[in-house]
Image (cartoon, rainbow, N blue to C red):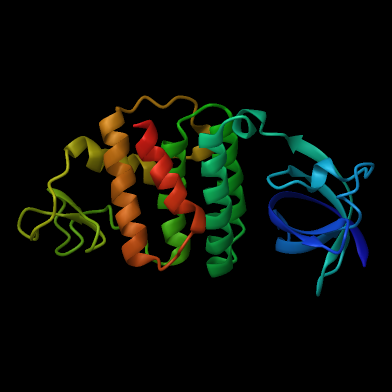
Length: 245
C-alpha cells in the first residue's frame, strides 16, 4: 500500500470491532472508498475527531486500490459548524450525502464530487438549503440519465411553452398540454436558472417562498417518477420542510 493524501468527505461509517470504524469517504481523486480508522473510538485516539461523519478534510491514507485503505490522519478543511448546530441543515446534509453516493455509483463521474462539495459549502454559508438542494438535484439528473428538457416543448419542440410536465420530462406548450398543472412563468424560469447556475458562484438568493415551494414539489415528483432512487432520509426531510413552512 502507498501513502496518499486526498481531499474527501465522510459520507457515513460503520463500527468495526471494539474501537474502530470503517469510513465511507467520497474522495476527489479515487471516488468512494472504504477506509478503516483503527482505534478511533477510543477517547484518547488522535484520529477520533476526524473519523466523524461529514468530516471534510485532506485524508492521509495507506491507500489500497483493491480493498480497505487505512487512515493515518487528516487535516480538516471545513468543520461545517453552521450546519452541525442546525437540525434542519443537518437533515439536508444527510440527504445530500446519501443522494450523492447513489448518483456517483450510477455515473462514476468526478464532477459529482465537485458539485456536492460546492452545495454543502453554500448551505454552510447560510444560503437557503432547499434552493441549493434543488439546484444540485437538477444537475444530478444529467448523471442519472434522466435530464429535464428545458429547451422547448418536450413533445413537439415548440419554443413557446405553457407549463411543465413532471411525467413527460420537461416544458410543454399549450398544444401538447393534457392535464398538467399550469405553473407560474416565474417558476418555469427559475427551473432553468437552477439548471444553468454555477453553484460555486452563488452569493445571494432572493427567491419568493411560493416559487421555492413549487420548484421543490416539481423535483420531488420528478425524482420519484424517473430516477428509481430511494433515499431513506428524504421522507424525514420532507416532513421537516412541511413543519417549518
